[in-house]
Image 1 (tube, rainbow, N blue to C red):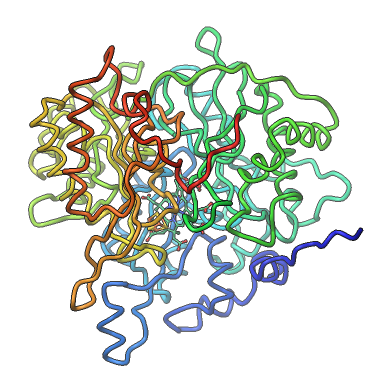
Image 2: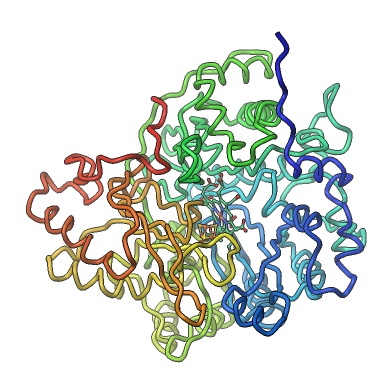
Length: 590
Ligand code: SRM
Ligand code: SF4
């Protein structure tokens, strides 16, 4: 009996024919047109950019017989979210000079520029690289930005996580020269990643000469990695394809429990797709974790689905094979067995906001940024205020996976002056906003995201005003629970392991064609520490009914909770959302 091999998707053909991600990008990057061709747009992602258009203007422009208002989104890849003062100044300047004026901190510790004219992209990318920032592999079917605890705490475990994270980021960066050829006219800048890449990889027989890890077709789909501590899962490690949980002894990292197969994206109409949290695969020492990671990624490269992109993430291999068969294949690639995971549990999470001691006499300050958008509004001068802090005190820092910013290396004597800058620019400290707002996130959605069905970033602040009123009425102001909202089921703000997930379901339209919030699916029963998926509570809930729907459940929580359980734990215990898990399928047992 012959086995039918499914036809690879069109994107596989584009990758293969691109000569290691070049395609027609060299010409198209400078041809003066306002948008890339579709095929070039696919390759563009590997270079850190998406072609977009202003969806607010679509209807109006169509009526006027005009083409879409094209621009590009450019994502800056920042392992562990770190930046220096000089890099922040540059990031900030470029937003005004070449983007739409705003900086967007992402859920993966990066910065996105929106509204960049295509003709400015080369200038933007080359300028970033000259400041040792890069957009290489910020998107595309490769290992993406690597997440790590952003807190600048001066102890061994934070330093060791940083060391392993940076080694990982360097090891899995694409090696092809296309990026440099296209955006930097062939000039390869040293030091954009911490190590000399050539030192790290020892080629073996059969490896592709240009891309020894990825090969000509790169990976079947995006691949994401996060590092976390058991007592601080601030990176939401289990939502990644590959997760590293530190195994500690006396404050030192001995090694890592490796998790595989996390991912959020789902297509509600396809029961074969679902969000999943990573499952524990093995324990690796610090000496071995890169080698084992390379084997995992190569197994994914060779066995991931290259015909159906909706089912191409690593999580589907884990679901289809089971974790034991996957482990056996990784061992086969390695040529030896691997250790069982230690099964250390995640116990806590810290958003690192507010004032904290670094452990060396200095302080760091976490400033909440609502939905990650750094810009100036009539009242709130967020962009100007943050820049003033950087300029006046020459501070670097890091972006968090909760879309916020940390400033580090602050002298005790400067704390009051920094607080004064915040106050003068109407920037709220963490202790001045509600717990609900502090733990909330929304994805960009309208008007930039081409996949958005509903509003998210623009709608959440108003929704939170109403939810805050409900929470205050019920006396629950001090409860910490996550509310995460997205404009479609792809899950960019990680709604499927939150206490309350609000996922865009169907579009709303006003008479003039402008976007208004549509309906949402409400998910309940995840929790702050991110180790459990939530479940569908109600589907197709109109935006303006979300607060009253939540009030019903929050009232039950206030009246019936036990032993200080959190809102998500309560919903899980009483199975208030006992319906389907997100995406409509039960997950395979771990
Ligand atoms: Fe995402 C696609 C924004 C984190 C799952 N994501 C997109 C695109 C590029 C839309 C597109 O493909 O045309 C969005 C650009 C919108 C815009 O206008 O900027 C977009 N994703 C974001 C960001 C900016 C959301 C945010 O609020 O910060 C995050 C950027 C992270 C970064 O710096 O790299 C972002 N995306 C995530 C996460 C969360 C995470 O990784 O921790 C997820 C869920 C985890 C996962 O990958 O499963 C996520 N994004 C997706 C998916 C679904 C993937 C899937 O397996 O089905 C898509 C759609 C796709 O890939 O086809 C997507
Ligand atoms: Fe766009 Fe959907 Fe991601 Fe939101 S969740 S940014 S709407 S792809």
